[in-house]
Length: 459
Image (cartoon, rainbow, N blue to C red):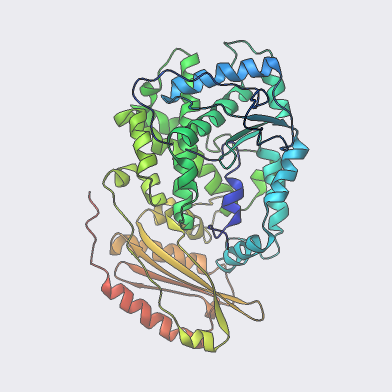
């Protein structure tokens, strides 16, 4: 199995900004002269990317990349250690790359998991969805495994011959991707990218990576307007107003807009919520604060959505689900187990909202302090989900319970759904035969009784 449950997250990470990182640069260091020809002029060793589809940049494109590399270094406060090979590819080549990355077996596990929780429709062709969405969205990406920057042909055409004062979508995209290359070389992202994480942890990590690059991109935009980034990050209210006026973060398109919320919202969140998270760090300590977050990465989307909790190092309640032999004896085999976190919990808790356009219940999810979800699957293909959740206090748990009861009404038959609350713990059950629920409730009550009344989580 892949290190991530959801191949969805792994593939969506390639959207305008993928991932990568290295140790922070010394305070004073001259930039290394970077050869932006894609490595074609290197005499030794042989170009490791010679068989990568596409072409190296033209001379005018190379000059534009040199200019943008200096901008990325200056804005982000990091220096390139070595050249970043570049390939220019057309849309068809990039789309084929997406298809080649799809692990059908792993993707099917992801589909079954999210269908069991009610977050994906059972008849969705998830592989085709990914190809359509990414084919529409990708205009450039950085590949940390190869240390390679890929830019779509029509984007480089916009850069070709651009003036030093020009600022358009193409330039913003390239600056964003160059920041990922800086992360790779200076902040060890490539190593951290391989670490084992939960779904919640992956969403938090992606928010740091993409939020960092998005904030730098905005810094470049402000610089061209004669403003400083600190002016924006020192005023959180102004930044949140900017987000309110652009709720999609520029991640738009017909395919993206029609994708299920569990696909679309985590993707948009990594850019917008991630940018707000990094902006808070930048406002307090400049880019050094963001660099430190790469060394001490946020462990949950709760920490990203509430940066003050990251600052206090507030961590989720540990939750361990017991084995239920009676379920396995009834033909239900454990299929997958995960932690979804506050972000994806907010999507689930919105399922029962009367307004179908409300796809996140951020208020009900805000008191999240931990969750663990296990999906079971029978030989017939039927699934059942058991979800232990913890909340900051009994009041927050009661609010989550109310939203969870509404969400349970979206599943059938009703007797196979269950929501229980004990103190600050809430149990969610979907699709489980009532005759099999008693040991689950008993284990949940023991779990709830073992939670402190309220954890020391700060003000």
